[in-house]
Image 1 (cartoon, rainbow, N blue to C red):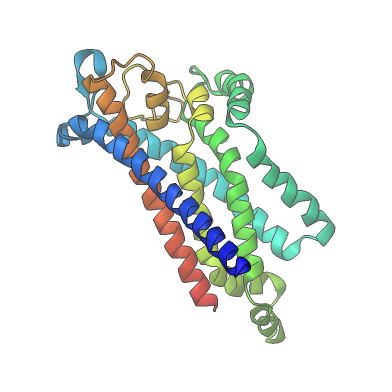
Image 2: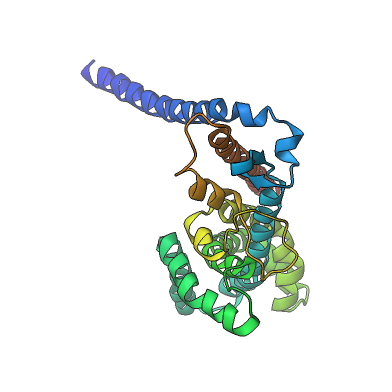
Length: 289
């Protein structure tokens, strides 16, 4: 009897813990939505407006959203061009002792605080770009490089795990038919691991778009955002705009509501990317199974 009662108590504790997590997320989302409603009510003037200048009550977020995707996609492209070949090498070609050194080192990048990476970018990358290419140095290119470093562990780790998860029978059958190791990797293993690789890229994209401190320190953040035409131009993204302006936005003003609306837009973008990642991973697991 006492054992059964203890189990019921533990089950209730677990249930309350799970429920509390859901309620916390729900109340946070509800609060953000409540505060953002006046700005969202502006409609297309808010979402498609080309000018963000709170002192003149102009709250068009289109250039900020475009800049956010430009910075995120560019960083992801750099991370993918380095991370996917690296994951293929680690999974298929590297000796075990070397893999046991390289992979933990790559995953260790996750543990570096973003503000430290941002400081590195500000002191090293920004100066390098300024001296090599001109401009102010604080620009899209600097944001790409810093975010690529931060995204790389996700791409390498998840892609490498996906490649190694492909059943060995596929590889053995291909080799038995006379294919080389490289041909087997490209034509057999990678197609079967594509869901996991794609999921790593989508997850990395969400991480890049949601990053704040490192991006804030290296992309310039002009007072009036615009759609960039060069990778050497400074830009504003959703996260940096919220951090920069929330400190002086008057509570209850349209400016404050607009910043909460930026948070809603950012939340929706990241949530969609996470849902896509989950669906891709499940499809990949079902396909292998």
